[in-house]
Length: 190
Length: 107
Ligand SMILES: [Zn+2]
Image (cartoon, helix red, strand yellow):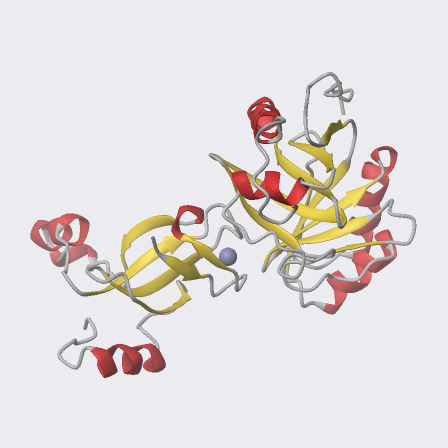
């Protein structure tokens, strides 16, 4: 992971926006219902296969598993243990049909924090961000303006957003523009 | 604006989260069928005003292909089902027939 966190603090924004410097991300494709996959995942991360469009974290928050599609999970790890975790998963899944790929450098992660976070996201994504409709633990793949993203909430007023690294600059500008002071919409946050 | 429910990830999303993929349930002719059959398979589409069975991909979501039964005039959606389905499911045909008795499922 070659990136260092971008300093977005000088930008005037209704939110605190930060590029997360290093987040381990592993793509796991396979039959999510298979016992072997569940067992291998639990052994490597301590977590079970999440439910439909959900994300689960362990107690420390170091590891996470997100439901990407009916045959794909995204595993979040601390940056230092990606290879180790992949090796453990390979071991646990030996003899089963599954694919593992280190995606840490393929994607960029943004941490967004502030009371109007749901309003800012609602400007960019065609998604109902009301707290009842989008609670903690929900994981949604969608688009932000013109590019694919995935969003989840780590607290009622804090979200994480991931996108492909190649469009990270575009997403950074989107987030800054949508969260600029004067752009309050008062949809969820009044 | 269409609202489609993805039969794979069960999210109901607006159409900009999906990419259209054209007419569903096309049958590829056998190799010996000749040029005319292949030309028709490649290019000839009925483009109906009314009920249409149409392929879509949940491009910005789970990435999977689905088929939507919808009306091209009113944009009413009768239902969606996975693209790995050879013919429209009976319950969807029934739903369409109830509102459009003259409609016939493609052979
Ligand atoms: Zn989907």
